[in-house]
Image 1: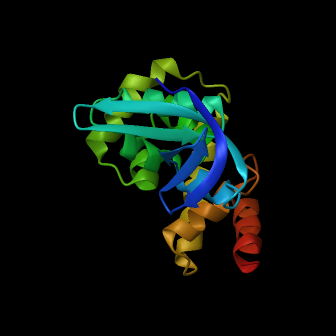
Image 2 (image 1 turned 180 degrees about the vertical axis):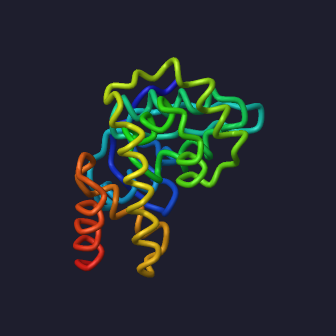
Image 3 (image 1 turned 120 degrees about the vertical axis):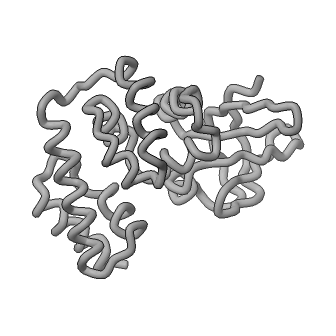
Length: 191
């Protein structure tokens, strides 16, 4: 199996990259967040790879760091979550926020941010809660509620859910709700 790839970006699409290494171009699916952080065509890139083999396909999924790959692999081990679904979940918010939501059992947060149904969100929580250590203690559910409140506030100001999420990814995670909204508005206003 392929564990990592280092090579030159020869094509950049909205859902994948083609990375050439040793004369071979590998099509690698990546999250929208990773794609936005990738360099331009012709630059060198290093990605950790998850190789997904089925009887009718051989797909590669790339990640800039090993913890993101580990979390992706935990997600695809949940029944009902495939590689593309896990990749889209990873692209919506930070891994730390997802881990907080799972460790606190906040299925409403999971359904809001990832577009998955309630039953699938409950499966994720049940199957992964014990594997994820809750490092932030009691502040987790408050922090998640603050992020949801900030997301709703930005949406009520006319920003799309995707615009609001992207801005909230860039704000200080331990800030209070009002500070998150102010920081997000500065980010959105700078576009």
